[in-house]
Length: 108
Image (cartoon, rainbow, N blue to C red; front, side, top):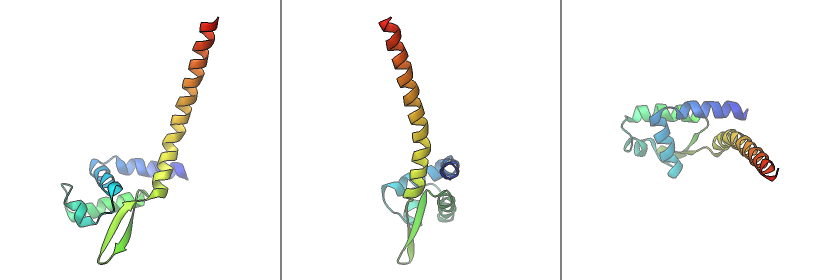
């Protein structure tokens, strides 16, 4: 399940505009209008990008009066983090093994 979420998140973040939007809402909850002021696309385009980010479980929206505020979806971000952590842990284990082998050779 986490791998599917991570794959969707990576696909969504492949687009530079979506990545910028994601980075903006990671700093603070923002409305479509506030996001549109900071990116070179229209409000309808921002809404479409947010739809993709929501589908990838990277952002959520909550009502705030007549508008919606978008923020990072922690669960989706956790799945993406777990995906990368798996590779990081594998890399660290391989490094540890190589270092131990090098130390053993030096002792000989």
